[in-house]
Image (cartoon, rainbow, N blue to C red; front, side, top):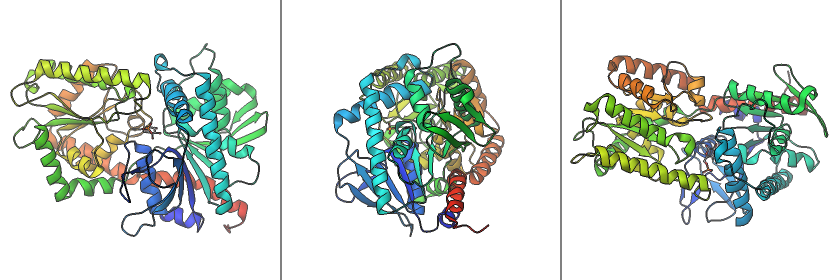
Length: 493
Ligand code: G6P
């Protein structure tokens, strides 16, 4: 935060996302929607100050002043209205019917039409127009655009002409490998060309960045070159130069540690568990916790297969250790999500029918999102955490769990297909593609010497404290901010 304030001087940051960071619940009452991206940026921007442009999702006025905590400045939120039919094509149609399954290696779930692509383009164009208009009111130090729903905003801003501050983009989700021998879909060329409009495009891991470069080379051939820092591509509009960087997103671990230790939060969590029949005092076997939007990429079915394999591997766990899944529904206007939610529910019911005993259930599902101040003590009181995503750009739940454990002795099991597994060492890796092997790893982890687990948790926490979300932001923005300062002569070297 200090770095940002010094580097940016008095010029604020302008952030652009698809989803707005608050849900309006009547006069002045705001709550955070589920989804790591908006929660993370909300935390950052409420400390640095700045402006945020997003699509309006709930009631309330067009412009809001979102307050910061404890003397932090907060930020201004500009909420854009998009007509429902256009929003449907952009969000349910192209963003989550095509881009999401494509980049999460789920080609069979892709469904979208040419109209959806047109809607996506149009929404990106409108957002770009709003950003350009806002530049006239106040010029930010840079514009930071986020995620797959907004890939074309930079291109549309450049088309508007005029001088622009540096444009940075962050791609939060995985980048898929180009299937060799297959003709890439036509729209991919447009998305990739759009990304080339930014001055920097950030990825979560080297693997995703390298795959992006491979995609650029396969689409542009010898018109593209990469010197390890700068990617240059000759396009119809001239030569584009940009920095494709690697910046693994993180959390504020101290925030989660404090929330997990807070006596009032712990009491609330105990009462919550009591209501669910999971009070650790009366159910000493405890619970494994999972927290995900109900999305096929989060491996719900695979997780339930793992649980069943775990019970057959060690029958003494059936009747003792439950799975507590916090699983708010998501994107229900997309068919693939509705079908998946039904399948996941049916699978959980089948498991409950088979294994439930008097006063005990194997699977307890909470179908709404929980406030982080309740989640943190729930992580802390758990027997362990399961992250079973079949593909995930990063996965912040794993990091939140480690921070909330704060040196506790409950293990984390994390899918090797997550950015978290790819960028942190010393984690216990599972593979949703192999539930039986994963069950064995979970069984071993649950019977490990608690001091050993504690040591692993403390090492991971030390890593997170160093690689926290503020550092993520600073490393992301350092290069574009420096370039801007040099260009304006503001920085005397
Ligand atoms: C993922 C995406 C984010 C998105 C979040 C919630 O983390 O990378 O862009 O904000 O899911 O998704 P939603 O569709 O509910 O906004």
